[in-house]
Length: 378
Image (cartoon, rainbow, N blue to C red; front, side, top):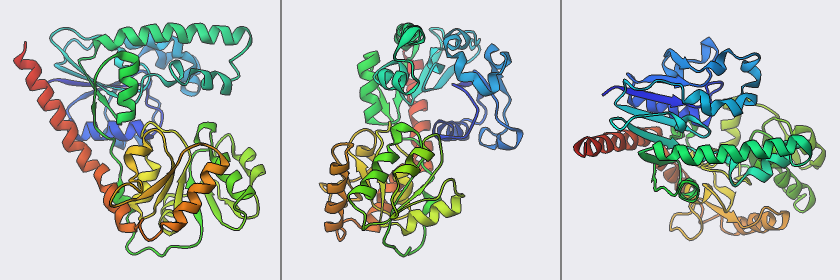
């Protein structure tokens, strides 16, 4: 089998790149394509230092820093990849990678992190946060996103099989593309977070890049305004750091960016990890559980699949229903009354369901079985 993997863009090592890393572990002989590749020479280990075939966007002025600004040109760019020599094309897509063109004698499998979020159900939030909900620029942005939805829907027809990163994303795929999907949860390096017999301390913890949808402001305000007698520690940096600092009371400690070792130590010692975002999957709650720490999570999105609630015989956390101060406060108080039920062993055991070894086995099995069935039907 000749295999190509097409990734949206290679500029950093984040959630989608963890999945890509394991795909390449499974199929090290695969060729790699990406719209742009600006990975530094010392950060290419996760793609096994492969040569990357890029699109014309790579050569555009200031593309290294402003590649996202060329999004209107990316649908055309991804269609220019000549993949005709491959038996299997695997698109690793949260934006446009699934739009590659394949023929009837090629199998196209899409690992879908989500249909383009800012073009579909998160369009209004994206426009507000980008200050593009009004004026001429706003109308141009809305027109472009309208065109993007048409293209995105059309190109779904070129995918033979969809893999969703969660059942939540599977429902989004069904809603947007009217296509079924198979859920294969992303790899989480849970073994990196295991600490033998950690000593719990009297503080709650959260860590995240400080951007609006992560709702770190909600967590900080809850502790400042209605739980001033409880301690909260926050690790992370980002555009909202100054705003969040202005909301912080004396019981809230903002540590900014920290090394992995510091993060791991705080995860293990925390009374609970608080997660207030609506995520497609959400790696952070699983890293907390791998460290033996319960999770208090907003009860929507991928967290419902990665955290075992109180209705489970082996709960690893608790959910709050609304992204409000009162809802989070009630969840924290309920959590403290259920401490004896939510054990570190429960958390660690649950996290092991999402290991990188498990991902490689499930992913290879899916590709092999799908390819064999497809070949038999030719």
